[in-house]
Image (cartoon, rainbow, N blue to C red; front, side):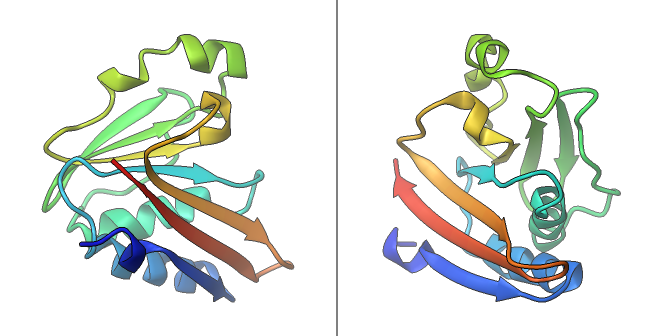
Length: 143
């Protein structure tokens, strides 16, 4: 799948719509893809991750791995779901993040802003427009 075909902008009006957009987008993913999720608290990063996992055939209950840093799921591809919320930027940059990245699976990293500059992978920025409405911007930075 070309980079440009994975660059998208969506507006959703409910968590269910956000999950649906993510589930559809999951169909465009390939083994080795890394998604970096950006957005303020409550913007819908975990909701988006749930939708991605649903689209990848994960049957397990997907929750935020904030207290354990990372959770593994199994679907069409293995999925590593990483959440950096509990780490400050200094601790996040010291974290060997490459150890969480799955070459033969999909890696989803919430609170990616704590990693510093992202130069490759897929950036997903979720913004709160109002109580229910979200703006989702997906940018494929390539390999």
